[in-house]
Image 1: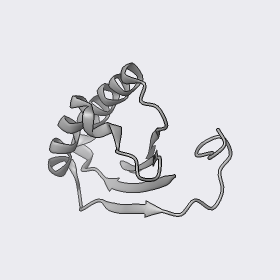
Image 2: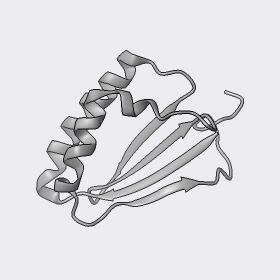
Image 3: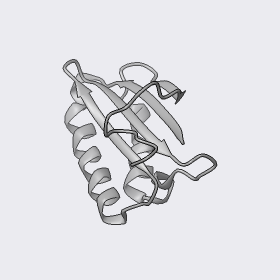
Length: 102
C-alpha cells in the first residue's frame, strides 16, 4: 500500500469554502465507493488540514476520476495561506485507519 500525507494551511477567510468543497468531495467519494482506497481529512484548530490517503501499491488514485475532487484541487492554490507540504509516508502503525489486513 502507498500512504500519502499532506498538510495544508488555509487562509482563514477561505475555511468555509474549503469545508463546503470538502463535503462535496466526500459525498462524491461515498457515492463512487472506490475499492481498495482509504481517505481521511482532519482539521486542526488553526485552519490547518491534514489529509491521509491510502492507495494500493501500483494503483491509480481514484480521486482523479471524481469531478468534485478535481474542482477542489484546482481551487486549492487560491485558498492556501502558504504552500502545502507532504508526499509519500511510511506507515509505522495503525489501528483501524490504514490497515493492510482490513
